[in-house]
Length: 478
Image 1 (tube, rainbow, N blue to C red):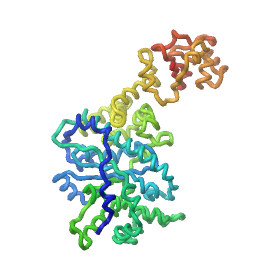
Image 2 (tube, rainbow, N blue to C red):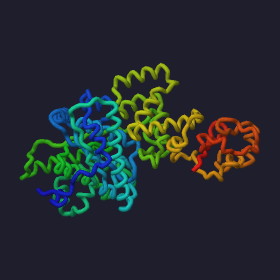
Image 3 (cartoon, rainbow, N blue to C red):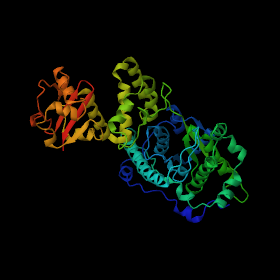
Image 4 (spheres, one colour):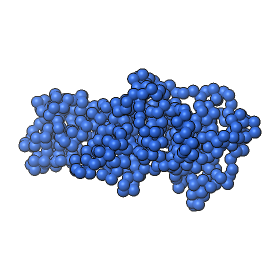
């Protein structure tokens, strides 16, 4: 049975990996002691596995190909993606081919899984833009993750391949309805589709479910079938809310393979792995900071904010996060947590977590910038800083103000305090001076008429103006 036209099949080639090549030469292989599934379970990265014993056997025999679907409703990955992406990364480190699949087609429809209401339809232009941004972000994530791994794991003879980022619009955009019905519809049972949790929950709701969202599981199953036929993909990875969609893909593969005239025979094919829905110890969904998703893209979430997000992890969560989000040996994590439990006020485990995950996502330079920003904003260490380092560390942070010399030098400090909104007005700034609550470079301002002079500038370009203990303005000359 023909399931896709030859022209589409021929176009499915691995995407370019320009960000990957320098790292591939330097870190072609690494050594991990624990077995793959054993390690994933120990780190809390898996919730369920279909036919786990058979999967374990197949993994031991030869490299597998595994794919993870990525929803393009946003332009960037966020920290909630770290769980499935690190699971995928563990497969890659052990020599398996990984396929991050961006839903350029299915994103135009919307997945009903885990939702009580229907998603608003995104425009084609938005999805197309997001696919491009996500492709770049995914390749960057794996490149930096491999660099992170190279500093923590011993070399081995296992060859590591770059991620093969795909877009399902490639094979779905030209698929006609009759071909889809003959290939997928023929092998799909409506009573089984109705029984899926994502569907039955919506059917019981007041809003119900549209035919568009009802057929989403068929499209996702077709993705698995296409990747199975084209790249030999045998495993689908997804969040726990994707279990029904994953099973639909496995069933489709096996029904197509067992159909009369099929060359593959009746041997059961395909596996599914789900990652857990991660929540904090307080029951909140992981990945939110002040109601906003913490992005892996520095343009959306600064490196400093990213670092601080993990630094603020609770004592009840930090051990779990160290196991899930780092490549540190589990024995080392146990030792760190023992030390932490004896002196939790030192927050040593949180500092280690913030450093490790920031290096994983933003590289060693990102860690240095985040730590410098922390010293400036919280520890108030400014006497030895270099202007260029401060500008890099605080890039995108609202406390940083780039100004011309004429805008700040020889201007009263009280006026600058009001201009940069660390005081509500000039008169409020003067009251701060009288109360010894306005500081320039950590020194209380004694005179309400004092102006900023060139001699006050740290490293010839910076001035640190602070009101009380919380409000700070870092003024930098352009």
